[in-house]
Structure formats: structure tokens, C-alpha cells
Amino acid sequence: MATLTLPAVAPSPTQDSERLRVALQGWGVDQEVIIWILGHRNAVQRKKIKETYQQLFKESIIHCLQSTLSGVLGKAMSYWMEEPPERDAKLVEKTLKRGKAGITQLQVIVEIACASCPNHLMAVRQAYCSLFDCSLEEAITSKVSSSLQKLLLGLVSSYRYDRELVDLNVAKSEAAKLHEAIEKKQLDRDEVMWILSTRNFFQLRATFKHYKQNYQVPIYQAIMSSGSDDLGSLLRVVILCIDAPEKHFAEVIRASLSGHRTDVHSLARAILARVEIDMMKIKEEYFNMNKVSLDDAVVRKTSGGYKDFLTTLIGAIRPL
Figure 1 (cartoon, rainbow, N blue to C red):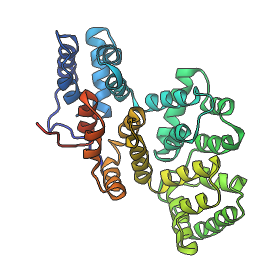
Figure 2 (figure 1 turned 120 degrees about the horizontal axis):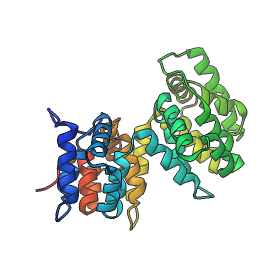
Figure 3 (figure 1 turned 90 degrees about the horizontal axis):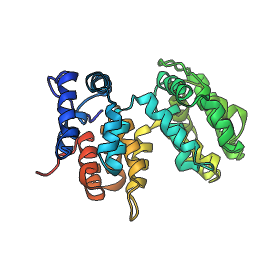
């Protein structure tokens, strides 16, 4: 399901670091070499490269990438070299610093809480505390409006059971509770928040399946028909991230590529977050939505080294 391709026999971190040093420090920056190396290394390999580069040259490779590569390519590659929990913690902080962050921005927090494993969420919370001397919960409380605060606090403070344990009777009962709340337009009920923020993902998928079987409509569609306010919109993101993350991220990518100007930051965020997880499924969903391949869309709407980097990550075949 991942699209990140790795060499059959990877060079050592020392070899990679030395080649990167030459590419970054030569007469002209060799973007092609930098992209080729870092675009074909997984998170564990990138961490070792980062550590080795620091040991060999007494300098952060992230700082080198930021100072040497221009614009969005430098930002995207420096984020790529961050360890995933630190990267996500910084994305959350950037979101919360916006002041009145909208749904498009706050969905970053939902993605971390609902489209990744519980251990990753815990690691992000720990990284956030270490980086910003503040808990993620405190930051949300001080920065997010009360109508959305309860939902986000429930999502980030929960530690879900991470094994496939499903009670079909509970699924049926809680599907009915969710349906009643949706029909009465009472999405802020405590039991709605509790169900969505506490139950394990397998249990929730069973509940959503019961909902569709019993009420002939997917729950994410039912929520939007009950009202298009911010809470309803954010709950839709919660449900998609739990039940069909490939659909959510395909929508994020489509939105980032729509319009006259590409939202390069949202595009990179979505691709970097999922390229080692389920990017193949996202590409399939994107094609089903748009009748055009994600590879073609990225090539058409981006340019330069940024285009080369993203197409490398998603496994696109670039023309010679």
C-alpha cells in the first residue's frame, strides 16, 4: 500500500551522508542526487542518515536542506527528514498559531488522532510537550473555540485499544445512538464524543457499517445532511479518517490541486504523511474521484525540484 520504493541494498548511512554532503556543498546544489537518496529511504533509514550526518559534519542536515534548497522544496524535504512525531507536533503548533483556525487547518489534528495508530498519537503528544513546553491539550484549550474544543480534546487525550476486538451488539446499539443524535441535530452530545474518541477503530468501523446497513446512508453523509456547521464538518473528517483514510486524503490532495494556485503545503503534508502507509490506496481513490491519475495531476500542477520530489515519493514515472 505504500509507494515509497527502497533500493534492494541500501548504502550505509555514512555513504549516504557523504554523498549528500557533496550534493549540498558543491559549486551547484545537486537536487537530483538529494531527491534520489532521500526520496528512497524510509523513516528508520532517514533517522540514521540524520544522526550520521550530524556526527560526521557537526551540522544538522535539516538546517542544510533549509538553507540550501529554496522555497517549498526546502521546506518539504526538511519536514521529510524530521522524525514523524516531531513533524506532526510542529504541524499542529503551526495550525494552532493561526489564531482562528478553520476546519481545513484543524483537520490536521484529526488526521493525527484518527488516521494513525494510538502509539503515534502518544509520540506526537510527547514531542509537542518537549518542543513547546506545553501539553497538546493545553494548547487546544487556549486556541480552539469551545464548539470544537470538546471533540478535539477527546480525540487527542484518548489512548485507544489497538487490536481487532469487536462487539457487534455494541456496534448496533451505538449506531442507533449516533443516528438519534444526527436526526435530532444534537451532534455535540457527550455520548457522540465518547463513542468517537474512545472506541477502538475496529469497533467504530463495525458501528459505521451497521449504520449504513440500518439507515441506508453512510454516516459521514448523514452527518452533513444534519447541518453544515463547523462541528458537523469536523465530525465528517473524524469518521472518514477512521473508516476510509484513503478517501479523506484523496479529498485533501484534490482540494490542494484545485484552483488557479496549488496549495503546496497541504499537498506536501498529505503526501509526506501517507507515502509510507497507504498512498497506493489514496492514488486509487483519487482516480475514482477525478478520472485522472494522481501522478498526472501532480506533474501538471507542480514544477521543478518540488515536482521531482513528490513524484518520486508517490512512485510516479517521470519522463526522461
